[in-house]
Length: 278
Image (cartoon, rainbow, N blue to C red):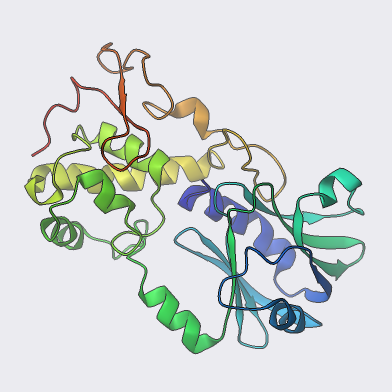
């Protein structure tokens, strides 16, 4: 967390308020989230510069600057990006990592309770190289079944690990991998190259539907995630398997099982509904 739907929610909510604004008086309170950059570079890059765009790539919020550089924020499990319209309280500033004034009493703030996120500052060439190492966007119009099938046939790893690999597919994490595999009726431990075309087609559609539904619900909140307006997401009320180990399957009534054997993360599945998939 946050995964694609959470970051997409943040970007959609903040972009209308942020694009075209000028950043002033940046403050970086913590440096342990910086990745291949320095505090001095970040402060210089965000001083008196206009925000020319804001997009999402995989699990990253990408703030495009008029200088051509990009501030790339991956919130990790506990980060959030917000615009405050009044001075931060002492409690709010406790977890503030980065602040930049927007004028008119507003402040852009990246906060990270456990500082598990990362912050990158990339010039255009570095951004193109970075983005090229990430897999295709699952909600893109050109993300077709044939491309997806080709990705699966090239790996013997468990199908769950493959769809969570950011080099193969952008933005899918543990929550939505669990959910998509359940909806596609696929055993999460099945080797990817043993998933037949019919099952792969089901999974392709399930990934897209689950992500789109989660975006409409403003993402999933279990603990720290907040939307760009500071609210909790709502998709946690629609989850079919994630976080429901030991509870009855909402499709067949069997008791849901949870294992950490696939990728050392909690994988919850229905042993009856997901008994096949290849």
